Length: 105
Image: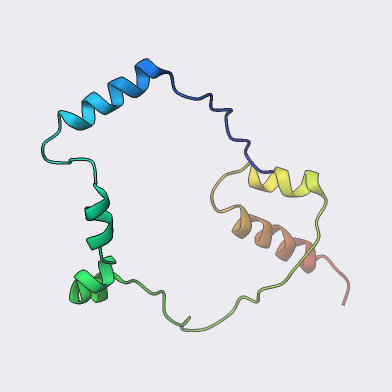
């Protein structure tokens, strides 16, 4: 179930003034000008060797054992597994494995 975003009311003039004062008071991180935006280049172009070092890929599975499938489940079942937190898919797989073991051949 998707999480709803909080309603965000517009900031007040006082809040905007506080933000602008904070920007003006920070010499190490000034607000960008139009010229700054025009002269900006993508990170990969500015630092190509660093980009290669930072790029991560998972790589191929050593022994592919899982198969991607599309499956329709009842909402209550899905919510119950998701509520158990990270790793819910592995727990669902284990529950299906136990159920499959009980099926007649």
